Amino acid sequence: MLTSQQTHQLELTTNYVKEALATAEAGHDWQHIQRVITNAKAILAHEDADAFVVQLACLLHDIADAKFFDGDENIGAEKTSAFLSQLSVDEEVKDEVVFIVKYMSFKSDVLSVNEKSVAFQIVQDADRLDAIGAIGIARAFHYGGFKNRALFDPSILPKIHQSKTEYKKSTAPTINHFYEKLLLLKDQMHTETAKDMAAQRHAFMLQYLYQFYMEYDLPNWPNSF
Ligand code: ADP
Ligand code: NI
Image (tube, rainbow, N blue to C red):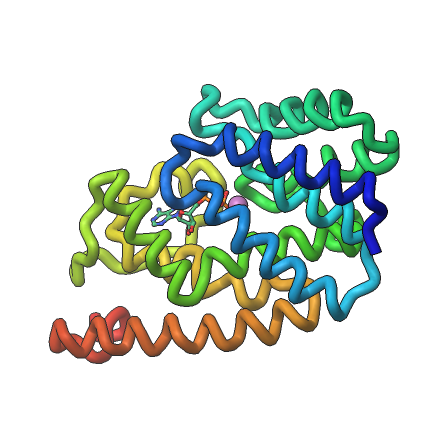
C-alpha cells in the first residue's frame, strides 16, 4: 500500500514526465510509460517488491534518451537524480530508482541478474514486454519508418550482432529486427508473470511473421536460403 505522500509524489512525477515527453516520438512517449506501468502492476501483483520504487522507476526510465544527448548514457540517471532530490523522497528510494534508470538505459545489459533487485527486474520486464507482441510490432515498424528502413528484403538475412556497436550500426530491414532483438526477449524475462505474458506475445509475433512470409510467397524465410 502506498502512503498518501507517496501517491502525491507519484502524481507530481507523472506531471513532470508527461510534460517532458510531450513531443517524444511514438516509441517512447507517455503512452509507452503508461503501458510499462500497467505491465509492472500486473507483475507486482505476484512479486514482493516496493511498489513505490517500481512505479517511480517506470515513470522515469525513459526521461532522457542517450540518442538525443550525444550518446551520453548517464543523462537519464542525472535527470532522475535531480528530479528526485527536488521531490524529497527518501535517500534509499532515490538511490534505487537512479540505479534502475541508469542501468536500464544501457543498450547492452551490463549487470548480472544478482545485481538487480526484484524492483529492477520488474521494471525491466515491464519495459521489455512493451517491445514484443502487437505493440512491439507497431513500435518496430514505427522505428524503421523513422530511420527510413525497408520493411523487408528477402535477400538480407538476419544476423545476431556480437557487439553493441555492430547492433547500433545495423541498417537492416525492420523484419530483421525481430531476429536481432524481439524474438530473443521472451528468454530474457526475470519474473514468472512476465515469462507468461511474454510467451503469449511471442507466439503472436511468430504468427504475424508466418502470415507476412505467406503473403510474400516465401513461407520458409529466413530458412529458405
Ligand atoms: P528501449 O525502449 O528498450 O530503450 P530502443 O530505444 O532500442 O529500446 O527501441 C525502442 C523501440 O524501437 C523498441 O520497440 C525497439 O524494438 C524498436 N527498435 C529499436 N531498434 C530497432 C530497429 N533497428 N528496427 C526496428 N525497431 C527497432
Ligand atoms: Ni522504455
